[in-house]
Length: 250
Length: 267
Picture 1 (tube, helix red, strand yellow):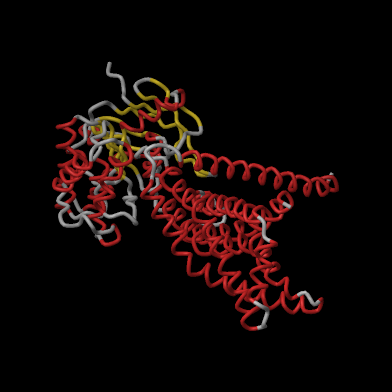
Picture 2 (cartoon, each protein chain N blue to C red; picture 1 turned 30 degrees about the horizontal axis):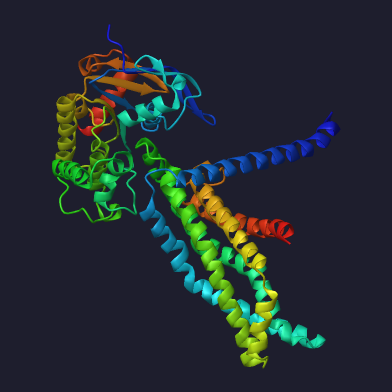
């Protein structure tokens, strides 16, 4: 039996009286793209933030390669963090830095690469994401969709092993959405990274996902592949999927 | 039973308040110590520190000169009309210089820097917090304290003594303007009294104060911005505005309190 790369075991998290994660169990496997779906405000982003260590669970265990993250030494946690990259829902680009500086920042601050090598890597990502002629612009001068692509370029520039995407295509037009999905898929096939995507782009996102998990009321209601999801008999899962199809006009 | 709870609740509130203050002071102290230690971590952030010296130091020069000049001028006026009653106007230079070098120079410079640069620091860091930029730094394994706070702290430690020295010099010239040029005290007497009364300990004491105030301003202002998201009374833009207000008020109050404590040790 395969061992999950990342595993949530009975994880609880609450903010005041709001119980966001309520005994969450989830497995994420190496080299696969796992998509997390669920209602807005249901704790999907909170779940992602637990993976990268931005939030700590109130109780329960998060395992990385079978080891509880809470038992890891500081250096081990640092090494784990370096393997991960996170694309924020609101992009979280640095307003006071130019687009080029934003994308180059993780390489400049965390590696000892030469300026020419950093420049080559940044240019590569900008070309792949169709980001031309905006090197010296600031995030506030870009459209929402373009900011998303810059954030994606920043997340990919370090060639991480695990990438967490928090709604990577929200606000993009259908053509750009397709391009971003294809790019995530192409990169995943090329480099074999492990991806965790929070998305509402159903059914498009299923074309690039090997696994889907549905978070409902702080618990994973469904976990399996997209075909199994389509055949799910759970009324809440069916209602959610059908609701999305109706809203999308499909 | 009701009577007992009425008696106990103020004591409980007092204890809770005292515990909160002690905890908060501990958090602020740790925030400062970590930021200070990270100034010396390699690679040194020379570019960022230079930019901050420009922002905190160079861009404050005009306002420091302006306030320094008028503080010196008003000291010259007030000092003259006080000393004239005792027939000791010759001591005006000493009175102006000692007041400025020991007290007013460091304190007023710190308050002006708090208003000009400290409030901007709190707002900048606060906005970075609410727009998840600080979270983004953490996910990239970039230490936010090293990236954001350490260059500001280093820059303030360099800039504040220089700004204080500038304030002192401009203030002494302001005192000369009113004391000698307007009210007729001999310039030779004015400057001779300064030379004979000011000793190196006065200057060193003023600089020690300016360094401590630099620590207070950067630590309090960045701390308020950094923890904007934990404020119970406001989120988002409102939280940033409250953090900025708190940063300025707390910094100014602490500058005056630490000034008293330092003066009592230095005298």
